[in-house]
Length: 472
Image (cartoon, rainbow, N blue to C red; front, side, top):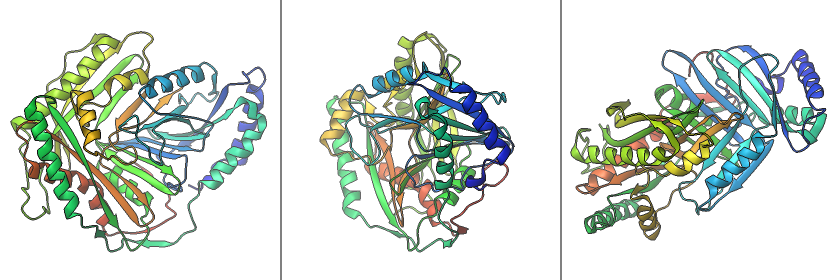
């Protein structure tokens, strides 16, 4: 789809009429969203410059057909914050915004305009991405269940000049002119010192656990890959969505780089007062190409995995109990199969108390023991003292919240920061009593392979990608 031609003459005229009709009487400090029905289709919305700032992509493929694909372009309103009260600040900003956010859906699409959410693992970390951000896009393109729509949002004070800005956003979203891109020769940056440092930190974590101050510590590491040719983002994301249908695939553009991933873990979702959270921990895998001396597999039923998963279940329930009017008993743990990787997952559901918002839930849940450790505060302090580094939003969150307050946030896992020919991949492993540092290093390799396998996969693509029909 050519974004510059997304709106035909008739649709553009309809958008202009509806904007003119809704502006009078709208609050001067408010936002106005107008949703247009674009007809039947299963667009993936990947024909776009994904590394451009304020371009956010979200995909939830469906196993048997059309999935849920969202592309957010530009900014109608953005709020960034940091510090211990960052989620309270985001909740306050959203509450104030929702009170003056008008929506015109005269075509009865049923689509609700939404804002994009993203945040880092640690409330004090500094990166090119904001520590925590709420972004209402100027344009939200949505493909769900075989139907496409576009929601155009502006500050009411912009008036009819918003039309010109929306058209400019669509033109700017187009990728560079067509040129062939082939998978280059990939060079993994050799980091034996970094690997030894990870093993040393794992041994230090085990010593801390033995002292009884913490029960679990999650250690992160990163690996850099370089290619002879620029990394083509659209086919990478399409492949991740296609091969990991159980996951949420996401992309966040910023200053010529892109934060991408395919995560299996939902932190929390909220719909019509019902809250859903996943307790995901414990990992087993069959590593196709282990490093010398590394073990190749770990049984998911190993007692170490069961203890890790129970820590997360207990923490999620403890966070939800005070804010839920009703919390259902946890289901039995199930095995989540993700290619060569397996995890234990327990689904937790409840009915929320009145007055509790999505960011209140995030504040209570993040970080779970699955990405930080347990107890949370003591684990984070230990990680800071020992130089734990988590680039971009790795082990933070990515998601969306709609005008009605419903939304979803996933944990940013299986991810990479990509810029030009370079990719920095992130992974981590949980250390508990009885952990084997060498085995934990092998676990991070298995998790890194989700992205690295796609980067290495030979393919010939064009930088100007046309969205395919059907599910990704």
